[in-house]
Image 1 (spheres, rainbow, N blue to C red):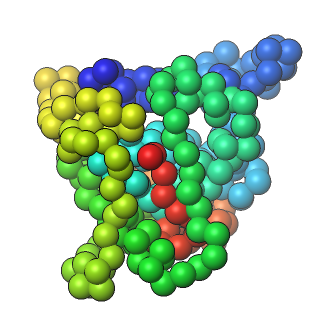
Image 2: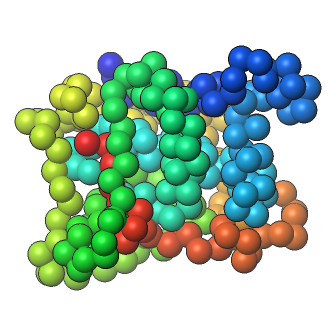
Length: 247
């Protein structure tokens, strides 16, 4: 599978697995005919964590990017706090998550949270978070949005100085992802350079600028007043309990 194929599978995934067959009519009636399962999933997360719908949808989109990075990387990736929230909410649908792994990404994508805070483990998660952000910039050719990924300009040299490094996967080659699937060395954005930015805004920054707190701005946003301190505000890098994944 090429990187483009993998990304399009993730990009177009609408979380249909989380909806039981008997709920389709009810979900469609409440959330409309366009991606009702995605909207229901977003509604559940937003209501639980006090996020606006636009912010939640953007967080879900960035979660998909995180999974992509976890699959094509040669190290265990670590999410931001916001993305980790979405990941946990997806994992709560245990059967649906297994089906997502089996049918969409076609490989496991396990979560390795921190059990007991330890300096070495926290340092490794810090290194993995910084490496995840660096891979994001390489693959998507843009900086990750601060509202979702937090302040990504932490001191990577300090992390390296303390000897912390990302945990490598057992894949054997630098251009293979989980389970040894070969994706190639070319960055993902290079497969979309000839495509119109309006169709694939994730490679052009067209998605809109930074969104604060639990609100959103630009193409993702609205003018809701519930942004700021509603759970979307603390979106810094997850160097502790978020753990890593994708091995």
